[in-house]
Length: 382
Image (cartoon, rainbow, N blue to C red):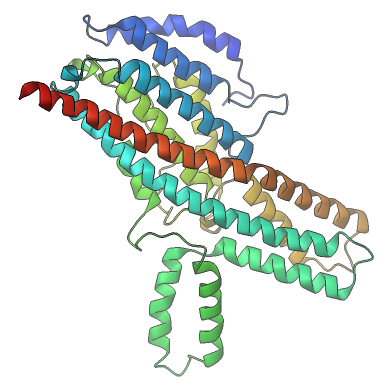
């Protein structure tokens, strides 16, 4: 992947790719209207590709705030300009009725993911609070034994929570019941396991054990291909564009945040490379996919959020190293770095959660508006 992304040169290529899109669509549709929508998608995603000038990195809290803002703009344009301005009778014609039905199904899955990620943000905020306890204990010198013990206790709790997996918890419950009848089970291990589960399960997600965030993304991406033939006519192309934007956004959120059952999340999505908006999305998609392939299962449990990985790395250092042997300046640098990550999280997580809720409500409202629009077809036919 190129190290830099020149937004200007990319935007100059939009007009070159437009002819490819026009050739794929029906001659009777309003090409300028659809071109405008795709150009808006392209320009907005080009604006959040990090450059060399210190822009917010992909998978950081600040980047996700930008991503959700872009998603809301694209969704608003899709609904107002492309969809709700059309004749409702057109929405009931084949194959548009099927295409739109598949889109609305993806919206339902996106709503579930938004809900799961909102709860995951609460868990990430809990990690931040544990890290802050460690920072507060260590930032005032000279560092004594009591401060070290308090900091390590908080950071150990942080690392335990990060490695905790809902699916493993479900298996552990079964194991506890099995061992309770055997000689190797002890009251102490049962109490410790119960305490750990009660501490971290309370921050888990209100979904059934069978619910899987990875599965939701898989279902959203299934059969999501550039429309051709009869599917490319009418609203088929813009519906595909918005479906791809929505699927990419939800995929990135699940990759970054500790949602329930992320095992099996695809490392890549099928994105139409010939589309005018594909290049910036593909660049960020490749970056996220590479990070997924690098991390082991333990790190995947806590997600790929840049700040979460930073907390984990520094917590491991501060827990494992002997404070009496580590150089004072090295220790101070690590504590300062941990404090800076906590500051960024404190600044960004609240706003991110608000934007997640806005995405949820906008999608839910738009779905109702589209369904009401379709109901007009039934009223016209009676």
